[in-house]
Length: 370
Image (cartoon, rainbow, N blue to C red; front, side, top):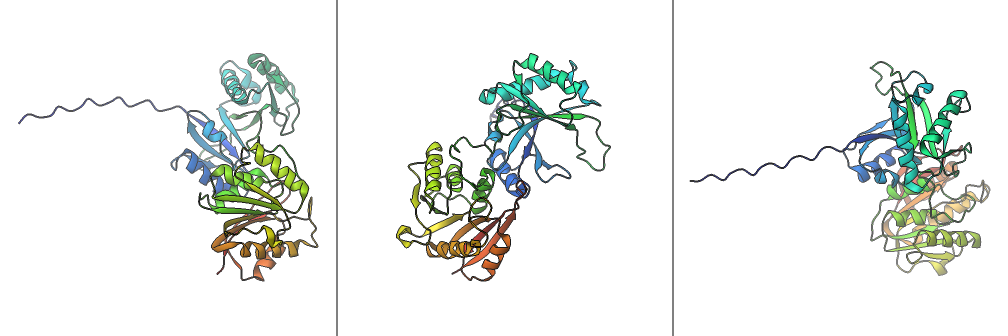
């Protein structure tokens, strides 16, 4: 009986070269960021939390950085270049400097940046002045010294190479971290209208992931402000319907502009009304309610916030179906805990504490009690 000849094996494609990237995020969101990384890059993507840090992790990723720049729960993404040098002035040598130039040029090409800046202790020293002059000449970019987030420049950070293995010897070297793009990932292009007390976009994206993204969900955003929660929810995935409600005409105007800039005007209904006004309540019960009650700093009043939180829970229960979810972001943790203890309308599913520039807001994910 003739035997079938074996097919010649196809040559295995070469492995893509991988680079190390640092993801920075707001402390408290590490688990949610790791979940997004696994979904975006694959569950086997190597992820390493930096020892002693609550706001950053390292990932290894091959190929183009588009998937990293698309992460919505991170503040910024930087490529990490590690060099076995004892001090920063050695970075200008011909052995190491070309790698820095290449990383800066690739970052600048992502969105047409025309400048770079250093963020490092002693960045005004002669060593960094010389390195800046050399880098400007090699890349054709100008060096800026404006340290605001919206300066629009490729950011380079410098640090001693961190010790990742406590059992091993301390590495003797320096890292150069080159941010991808001229703006942080947390800066959203759709945010064209500012509003006092607007939700940080990465927190909003984390809330969306925490609550889950289902195309069949009918979503309502109480006290929607400038629309951050609504926009982040719909950019994460489609919904059956989406309604934003706020009593402030300025808030509705800002939300209208931001929703339009995000390309979602046809998908969102914005209503100017008090949330307790039953005339706007949906005829079909909602599946998910998002709420960001006033904190009493930029908007609202601490004296009235307990009543506002009680109203959010009452109205959310009234407009939802059995088993629906409510996600509340609030800085009034004591008030929220007291209100939850005093109601039988909602049961807590999850709680996430976030640290944001001196504020410690908390996310409560609740399930409707029936």
